[in-house]
Image (tube, rainbow, N blue to C red; front, side):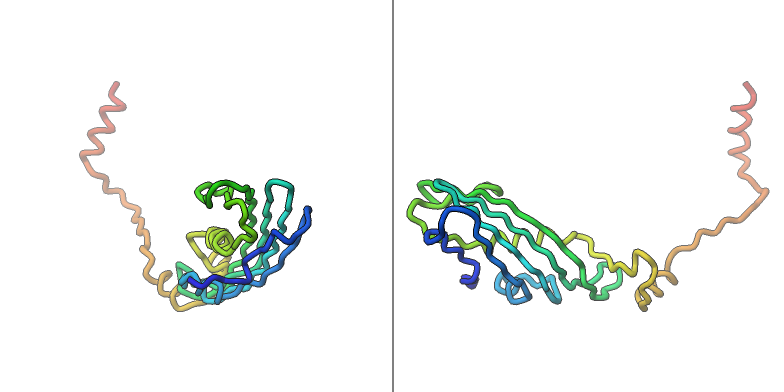
Length: 177
């Protein structure tokens, strides 16, 4: 995997307080993770690092869209996504990212790479079932939808006076009390 250098935040040179970093995420970001679920990506990400004396807090917010294929029709469409992530960064003996909300980095470390957090946050922001909005509101015209409509099973209800005599006998049991 590429190191994605632009996602390193060198916190050691920063003053105490909040610092804002902006990123534009596109397909190359996901390609570096060998993730190929998206046809296209356009996401604006803001990361705010709040540096304190003995710890830091990172708040990330993302807004944009990913172009995905509809699970029903296969038609590509832009799916709007928003996501945010809050991370507490503490110093300890050794690197530990086992907790989703707390990152422990070794004393003496001078930068953090947020790429993995950005990646997970954005992938999880996309719903597992991706349905074109036109499928939901009926405005999408596609050959696939026409074919699905055509092949949909039809319920045939025949009104008939012929009832099964076994049911008639059972009904008598109920009314003969």
